[in-house]
Length: 152
Image (cartoon, rainbow, N blue to C red; front, side, top):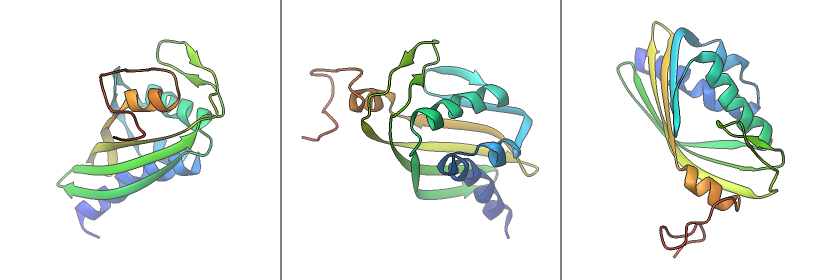
């Protein structure tokens, strides 16, 4: 297996872990200096990132990621994905507040940029549309700013 193919395999572990609702296989591949970027959140370390992802797995127990494409160049891997799930449990926010269960299904697209070094994941950047998620959950309205998730 080429180095780029191995890097793709490592980068996809987080998607597989989230789909299985078991973050342990992913956490074992994170380096000690691991750092992650998420929308609206300061850079997180390994422990904080596990907590960040765990709150979504809890709130959306039927979470399922679909991978559309995976591209690797050297130690960088780009994954384009769509995730969908139903919020049946409370969602803890980064501010310490919670969003009660809405029982609504939501679908959001995004990308994950992963950097791999020496067989470990050293950095991840998750980029996805939080406004779309909040709109679909009925939490936030944005009249006149954007098209709704229902289309044109």
